[in-house]
Image (cartoon, rainbow, N blue to C red):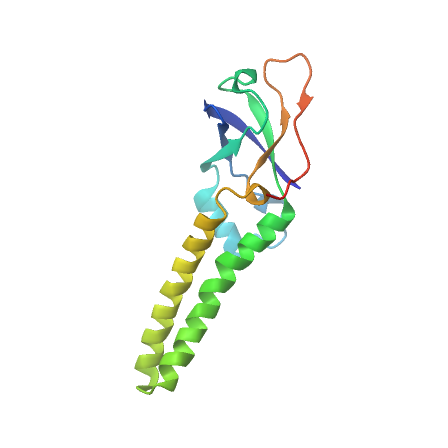
Length: 162
């Protein structure tokens, strides 16, 4: 389980909106100067992200805006999501290029086919995201709340397949 700390910014009847701050680990890496990820982290470091976290059986009255909570995302969800986001457009682009190139027209047709395939792959990512939007295996979960209670209360429950 990958965990992240955030602050509650809104409370709904069935979910919390939690704001997280992206942290960079580039300052401790030896390859700071030669890494493209380091440049991206400099641009986006400190960017605030908001996540909708379902409450499940918990009562929204238990939480207050401004409370700190710890969220968890299953590793399997992160890995499968990354595979879809990166591989689907790439494979669709290669397929579009091969298909258009086999019909003739040379390099220009292959380039157009690659662009069209890439677009279809991006659309596929969007459709996949829409299809899994309510799947509990892919949603962040509350692990720990440190709000207005005397002691932190464990909120984690094992993943439940829908």
